[in-house]
Image (cartoon, rainbow, N blue to C red; front, side, top):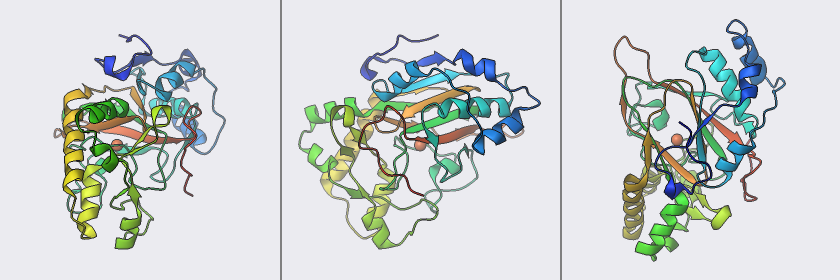
Amino acid sequence: MTNPLHLPFSACKQVLRMPIPHGLRRALPSRETADAALAALLAGGEVPRLDVSRFAENLAASPGHTVLGAPASWTDAQLRWAYVVLLQQFGSLNDRYGKLFDVVDQGLDHTTTSAPVSKTKAATGMHTDSSDAQYNPDLVALLCLQPGARGGQSLLASAADLLERLRKHHPGLETVARMPWPRDVVTPGLAQNLSAIEANAIPVFEGEGDGLVFRYMRYWTERAMDKIGRPVPENLTLLFDFIDQDMADNALRFSLKRGDMLLVNNRLVVHGRDAFEDAPQAARRCLVRAWVDGFVDSQDNRLPLRA
Ligand SMILES: [Fe+2]
């Protein structure tokens, strides 16, 4: 069922679902040709143009997200092709983890290594993507190929609503939220020494109104502080506790099914997922992540792209 459009996030009681554009169905390659069509697309081939203005409106401001449901009967290659075509209407796909990054449990542990949580089966905690101060994707997207056996529900929360409640309940903490705090450096290819971690400092909130930017990764901030030997100030812990509790109370929780494409404005909306378990002899949970740069409706304070 499609929800009413253009609701403020706080009025959203469920995730905003919209039908995929007809143009995407019409242009879909056959099962036999989808792999080649996908490869051509990822290599820079021509992209069919679609009218995505309604989706762009919902992504640019509240509610800052949408889920498009493609038929589960499409093959993986057809779904990936449709996903890439759709995302390229909004900007370009970032390549630092590969244009398409399969989020599957690789048996890794992010608490004992520098592995990203996206390679584990753990709950992620609510966060925005990219721990690199110099790079912030405009849109984060996930295509569900396999929802998995147990758990793994998705969560979304509004940063603007959160800021409003922070001002109401703990106005003194906004100053803390607008100071840059270090984050651990986990991006492949970047120097991971202590001075690099110290320099990789990001405020939780920047800007205001339409230019609001929220960047939140509690785990990586606390780990950075630990590595560089800086105690976490009490007021920063208070801020993190407030944010986590507020998002636990107010986040939308929902399940993605095969064919669902979740698109999220990474500046205005925080996302997370519950822990999950794959079952033996069953298809493993697989979500395909992509980061979109240069979203046409994003604000002027877009961060520079990194080569
Ligand atoms: Fe994420």
